[in-house]
Length: 461
Image 1 (cartoon, rainbow, N blue to C red):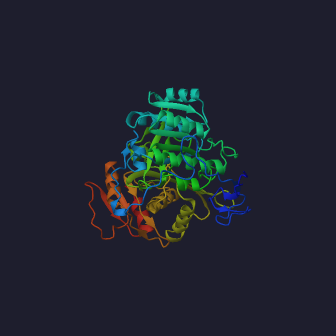
Image 2 (image 1 turned 45 degrees about the vertical axis):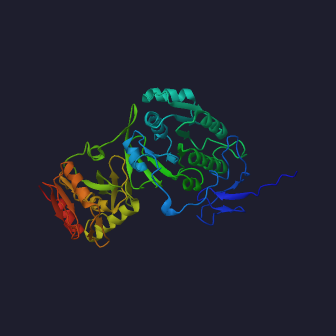
């Protein structure tokens, strides 16, 4: 009997675009040399019944108004910061992908989560393809992780992991990492686009058919995106990014995709000698050690989902000794910072066109919302004029190209957070006629343009 040869196709490792022929440049994302050969696996069923083409036995369709959502089971992970990002806790039968740079603390986070899940969810199977059992035991002793419900498996072959899952019947499965897992039925090497795509699909089928919560750890490439095909992010239910620098103690967990909750929430952790600990009060942590009376420092309030966080923005403007002035921005968008520099020179009359400018957000936090524009501009003006912003002042507002200020959203939440940290003065745009409940003892100074804001912030006490 002749064996039918499967037709080879090519897939773009950047965007997941498929083609029957190889391209030097992807027609979809315009990236070069991203097409790799992909051999679709034949429609076979593995030893334990998971099909490559079906998630579950065929069931008849149901009317939308007759479908019940009461069977969605959520449970706490033991980390309130992680529960916030997941939308209230982990959901049974979900597939969660956690990505981050090497050394940021992904394995540390997952091992600590296993300790909590073993107490509230049940049995946990930790499948490690990068570390041996002894290495994991040493890490667990350092993190003080010990539980009889945590099973350690040092295995990279997906079929062996599935065998252990059927034998032990865990409630939670952790795969660390997806780049090391492979299917023996595929000829591609581990970490290849073919292997990552098929292994992720098999894990998705496992989660949906058995109700197991599956956590996948993934690496990121030099561009900061998850290594492997983009389609891997489309298959999973949640995509979480664990961000931070090794030299910085704080780590930020963000949701890039979440089918069970909002993608605007963030979780903040602090790395210590005994692993990661939750930062319950991030505003106080971000402002700790703030110098008083130092020019170039300004406090703002940014919204991360439903959580207001106070952050310190520092700027340094100095005379340039080179032909072209240097401009650097850390924690804020570089293009946005350059736009604010141009507005300050044109609308506020600051001579910064031939000066070096450096902008930094203290604590490793990254601020993306436009409400931080005014604080960035005020910190630059403070450094340029060498005059400090009053230490009891917080600033927020969006800056337009004509120097006008636009109102921000969630104004009451920002004001309540500012008052809680004993800041008694706020400089912000007008509320636009909206009813506003001001916290007791908080002075609100409304400004209309950039010149008024700089004058209100840099006035002498």
